[in-house]
Image (cartoon, rainbow, N blue to C red; front, side):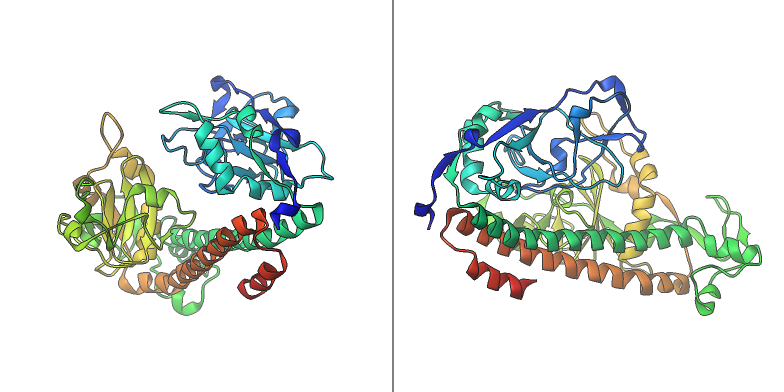
Amino acid sequence: MSEEWPTVRLGDLIEIKHGYAFKGADFTDDPTGDVLVTPGNFRVGGGWQDGKRKYHRGLVDPAYVLAPGDLIVTMTDLSKQGDTLGFPALVPSTSGTQLLHNQRIGRVRVKDETRLLDRFLYYVFCTAPYRHEVLATATGSTVRHTSPTRIYGFEFSLPPLPEQRAIAEVLGALDDKIELNERMNATLDEMARALFKSWFVDFDPVRAKAEGRQPSHMDTATAALFPESFEDSALGPIPAGWRVSMVGEVVSVFGGSTPSTKEPAFWDGSHAFATPKDLSQISTPVLLDTARRITDAGLAKISSGLLPADTVLMSSRAPVGYLAIAQLPVAVNQGMAAMVCDGDVKPPFVLNWTRLNMDEIRSRASGTTFPEISKSSFRGIPCVVPPREVHGAYHATAAPLYEQITTNVSESRTLAELRDTLLPQLISGELRVEAPARLLGRAC
């Protein structure tokens, strides 16, 4: 048990180096630039996420280039709750892209690797006692800050190196499987997006047939669904026989509202209640659950009511553009545009059309405090609609990809719950490694 392990102070075992304040003049929109690591690259609870990339073009001191596997922590969080403050991440391999050690990020170095392993330390940084210490000692009201000195003060029980390694392997195996699922999901999602772009944006099969070529990567029956020529339209040349419509004629678009948060009778019910924040916290475009739920009385306050599963959700403000297919019936708040696919086109088509037309959608947003696109403006955006047979061929390919993504997300949630259950018990010594190893064999 943990009584066998000595109590140690983090400051005796690690050093934390602050990042560099890179100059704004060197920031760029060029995606070939170096990537500045920000608090947005940290998951709530710990772990790496890509987030919105911030690029840099200029000279860089090699001392501020992060290496794959480096352990980093957030020193600043812009939310009042300090959602990611102090949480850790391991720097991923980036296929040649340099990740820069930016200000607000601390790089952690273990002083003596014969006493403490990086991967075990990563999980210490994910524990509730450490998290409580960071938040209790943080400064700032609007922007929350911590510091190396405050982190150094945290004390915990340090197991022997073999036990650290075994604990890290058990928890790491779960995280590795979750990461594998995420990479698989990204590949599946990209396949559906690439096929949509080829068929419905670039019109590759039509161009091939117009040039007398057989469309590539396509069987004869599918190729026969596409015309051999284009015709003029309000949006320029489109495949012959296809039509131009508006989003509001292709899907039913709904907004929502928020029942009074001062009325307890509206909250903690059985109905999922989706907000832009729910969409911001998922890494793949499927929504399995929401942070808050409402009661029947709360649902009665929302004119759009409970929308069906397979509704495509888009944040319409703060910011415009988070997207997901709801996997359960949901009500939505006022920051959402919900697209119910009650016509010929189905969710994978609508999701990818929305993605690939996001520049046009955002150009129609207005507002002084933050940009917002109204539901009426969104409904009026023109779109090219293929014949039912062509859409059906796309859906037959894309729908199974999103079904597999949903299965993977569900599995990852189960694995994360197991990891979060095991983590405090293993780190504290309440549970020794042999028991979770048996659990792990069944879970993975």
